[in-house]
Image (cartoon, rainbow, N blue to C red; front, side):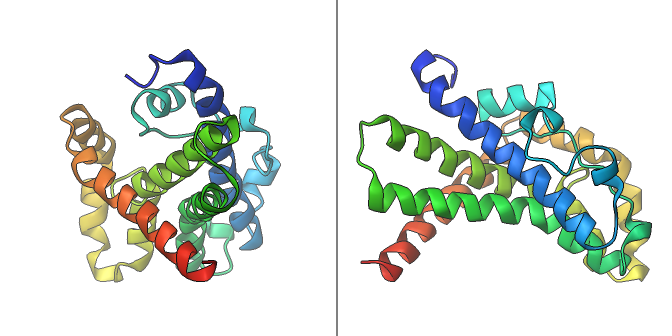
Length: 205
């Protein structure tokens, strides 16, 4: 239903590329900062969107605003501290998206008006980045939230995670097919957008 308006695609596609590219770049940059050169050696420490696109995941983002990019390869064995490194590398992608979403909300409130091209573009930048961040913190493999969870779990509970891990992608697909993820992800995303607007109104009246 999001592909019915060809004009809207002019703003949606570049906004989508920004969200995906910066998300994956943030993972690669953080991994490199923690001592893992794997992404850099494979050409993923770049802001070139072609290096990060996954065809199916990109199509899903365009259609339903839920999707994925090609995962950045990492080797936690290279991290100075494996558990802490895994947490911060996993958080970097959604964190970058939230920063971009906040920046877009700021520009929308302070420097744009409805009806012009820049406003339409920034609305898409804000929505895609916030939705991508919220989607990725779902604690199901292979999403970032699952890696954050495993990095925080006490070691005595890790076997529960590893027992569920092989079924994570299947569970994710089931939730998407039956429309269960949007039931809570959409309200959370718009709550974050409203929070951004509230904070911006406090910072700069």
